[in-house]
Length: 528
Image 1 (cartoon, rainbow, N blue to C red):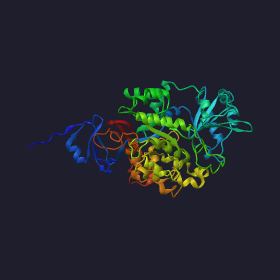
Image 2 (image 1 turned 90 degrees about the vertical axis):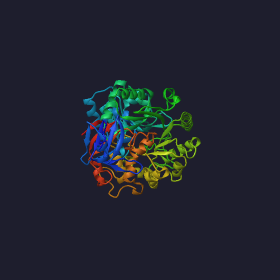
Image 3 (image 1 turned 180 degrees about the vertical axis):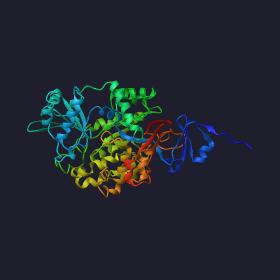
Image 4 (image 1 turned 90 degrees about the horizontal axis):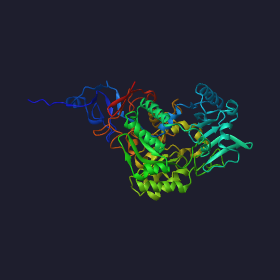
């Protein structure tokens, strides 16, 4: 008789319900990991009879999924925002200013900054003026950004620093006025007139922001993010922190279309490490629906003279696409309105051959004219969606769009064009928790369970689709599906362990699921 000797490995995870999210969506009980890579999966007997380890995690029936990936967010921006006043869910303009005052008293700074206000959540759903800000902050400049990041309010002090008057005109943006003077509301490109005067965070502040963002993201099961819009020095900082082992989050860096990014990265082709992917460029076609900057084919239902804002001229958008195509880069374009989507599909079609695998993306794809839907499939354009946008916007978006609302947030219709799509959150616009996106995609309800019957349920995702969208399809959307996104031999050992079965629990249980452990490269980076 001979006895087969068990192979020693670094980690064994066993006795669980492990959703591999492989092509057949198989479920296994155990995983063997060596050198940060998945070596084998199978039943308890399969793994424990073939492998041994000094480190064994007994799941006791808990549930394992591939590490969650946010396919569109602002990871560094979220970290930087953690030091500013958070104004989300404020129920009035008065509450916004009171929060701002309290934050400033506790954290006095040269400029008062905040983010998250949303006039659509107030009883008076109109942009405020800066009169109250001027009263509370007469001598300190204030700049607070709307929840969507496409509008801001500046006080009189900040407007004076920027030289903004009622006569100020800016391409791709708007300075709102009332009674012949600026109200303080700046939309899209007009925001930059003030923002360029605010002291930039230094590398020490950015380092702390990245570490804090990572800590919070690990706690909700994220092991990878696509950061939508970074400059060269920020990408280099991320790379250095990853190489030092301080930053373990896997990051797909979408580059801003700057000369420096072209010289350092784009002109040299695709750049990849195990933790960093550099192969995409991020551009903007329009603004946001909430601030009426989304570019529409027909005027807003609640503003008959307004079709929104094209924030970058067509020639510039086209030239970035030409540059990206030449160097093998992926284009990721922010498009909210149906006119913006059509514009970019027109431009993309000049460069993308039918049946291509270049995976150019339209970020958000929020309102799509039905005539344009088939063009996603025709040119293999990836609709990069954020399911929580639907449930955040649904109660006021109908006012902006009227009957066109049925063409908005049409995630299932978009999914059918190529058979797959990635899901993200766009945090800090939405919450960082990817389970909220899973819930919104499947239930089409907000966290209060509204509306009872779900919002436009014909465009709901199945649970399997929703899980793929935040794992395998998210990895695929940045050409990483051979390394991430499913639990299969040869891939990175990135997992999240939950106390809830996402595929079979009552759907309302999803939002209260607890992350037990988050694991990257076989290392526990978060434990509850």
